[in-house]
Image 1: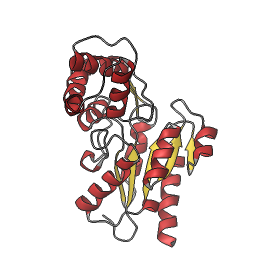
Image 2 (image 1 turned 90 degrees about the vertical axis):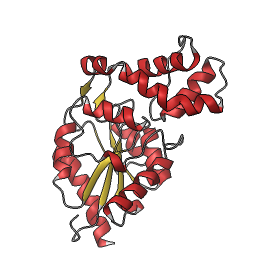
Image 3 (image 1 turned 90 degrees about the horizontal axis):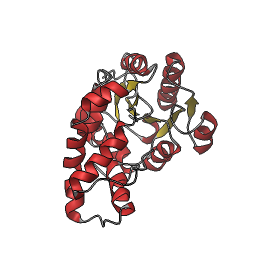
Length: 242
């Protein structure tokens, strides 16, 4: 790392920020439900901005199934198996969002920037989704925060920050941790977890809604890579001046 500038941890949300999954995520939750309970799902999972464990607990509840300790222990296993069975379908129906690869590449050239993901997906599934569209280069999955780490999304910020500190030996603070996501839940997770939020309106929420929730900056998409880089480096410069 360049010691002349403060380290900045940039954490990307995955679904609807870096990729579109073509409906395969909801199929994955339905498949995991069936593996877990032995019966097909009758209801669709409610997903946006939630962790996998929260999504599955809610899905079980909607079907009148109490989420036991055994269920919760098995969730990572069945979620991983369910997406693995749909890996080719993900490639067929999904795609990397415009500008995502260029944004990751551009930020990887900036001094002091560490990039990973903060996602409700369990770690193996997050990697499958990103790697399917060749967006994994430039992202350090060892220092991310995942739905398998904690059911509460905001708690994943400190999980990722702690891992990045340990691996890179850098001083990361609230002011130098950035979460980029597409929902107001992402913004809330950033602020509640002690990070700066940047919004991208490629999901259910508008630029105005993301800004109103407290995002430092928000963009309609990732196509204007230079604007995103400026937003990140402005946060970094502010930390330098502090």
